[in-house]
Amino acid sequence: MVTTTPSPDAVRWQGPSGLTPGSRKIAKEAMGSSIFVRTLSTFGDFYTFSGNVFRQMFTRRFQFREFVSQAWFITTVSFGPALLVAIPFCVVIIFQVNQLLIQIGAVDLAGAGAAVAVVREIGPIVSVLVVAGAGPGTVTELEEVS
Image 1: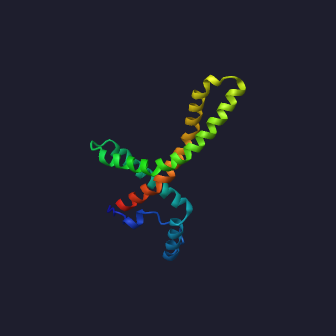
Image 2 (image 1 turned 90 degrees about the vertical axis):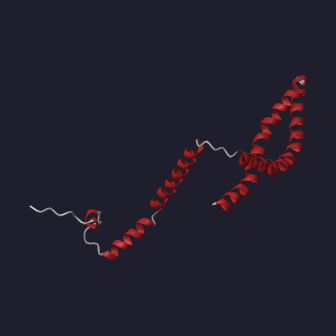
Image 3 (image 1 turned 90 degrees about the horizontal axis):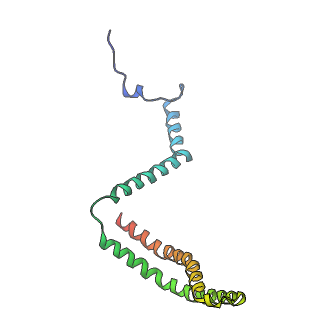
């Protein structure tokens, strides 16, 4: 009894019977351009990127100079706009908090109440300014590297 090894083409799935080679090519192109396949491809790219980042997190070489450079860049880009927004915003918040404290008779807490209110309200605004100001520059720098 002689057994023959099937050819690699015979092992692969050929699709439904009755398809001509031209219709197989069209079906393959249609499947490759479907939104489902593109979505899975995007998720695959994301998880590949995440895996590479996770793997490189534990290497011994920490780029301290690059870390300081990026931190300084973000500080210089976002400090000016954050300060320009924070000063008038703080004045308005402190005025409103003081008016409220005067009405309820707790003027002694004016300093602490104003500080808590300012820190709580300014935090999200500064975060937005940092992301909006430093994000495009960082992306541009990453594009230049790759």
